[in-house]
Length: 133
Image 1 (cartoon, rainbow, N blue to C red):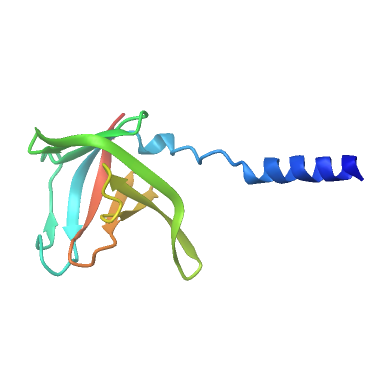
Image 2 (image 1 turned 120 degrees about the vertical axis):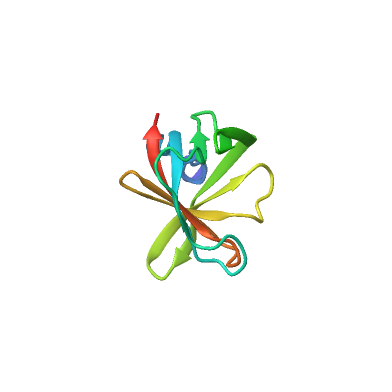
């Protein structure tokens, strides 16, 4: 009986211990804004041409840099919560920057397009196109 209990406890511990989901290596690199849309307040719907300099760079060490017209405006750490948001049968990952987990966005990768859709409806959704690693 002791052996059975020991095996059950070890099995439970192994099942309870899960590794964090690795970030998609495809997320890492430079992404340039192509379109902003939706939201109730800011900004109005806009389309951006290639070379506009509005870039998000994601690094493998979970750091990011945000450029506006090729000028660094913010940098820090980003966090991804895998499978954190469910809409019907569709499950999305969430991303947030720094320690502000209240300002989360859904993160959707489709080909070379990255969509960041804030969970706050007043803020617009942004589509980025991958421009480099």
